[in-house]
Amino acid sequence: MVRAPNPGISNVLDSVAGTGPDDIWAVGAQGTGIERRDGGEGPGAPEDRRPLVLHWDGSEWRLVPVPDVSGRMGSISADAPDDVWAVDTERSNVIFHWDGRQWSASSAALTDGIPPFFDSIAALGPDDMWAVGYSMPNYSRAVAEHWDGHTLERGSESRPGRRGRGPFRPRLRPGAR
Image (cartoon, rainbow, N blue to C red; front, top):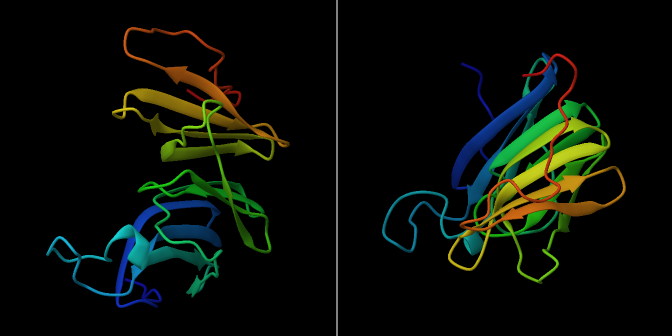
C-alpha cells in the first residue's frame, strides 16, 4: 500500500484514471468535518467540501490544486497527460479540465436553461469528450454533452417514451468495442 495525502479532516476518493504508470489521477472530496448534517460519517454536505485531486507521478501521490468550488469530483477520464477531464457527480453541472499545467472549471447548461447533473465522463481525444447524466424535472431526462475541441454541446436528451432519437452517436476509436 502507498500512502496518499489526506489534506482535509474527512477525505474520500471516488474514481481513478491514467495514461501510464507515471500518470495516474484519483479524485473525490475533502471535507471540513467527519460528521454530516444527516448524522452519518463522511466528508460532509456538498457545500462543506471541496474537490480532492491526487496525482501519481510514478513514485508518490501529490495533492494537486483545483479551482475554488464546493462539491466533489466523482468521475475522471484521461486520454493524455495534458488532457484530463472530471465531473462533479453530486450536485452540479461543473466539468473540470486539466491542460497539463492546471485545472479549470466550467459550467454546462441545457438549451432550456436546466442544468445537467453529470454521473460519468469519457475523454477519447483532445477534441472528443463526453459527459453523461440527467436533468430535471424528476431526474427524468438522460443527458449527453460533447466537447469537440471548441464548444461543449448537448448531444441528446432522452425523455420517457422517446427511443433512439437525436444526434447522440458516440465515436469509438478503431478496435474499441
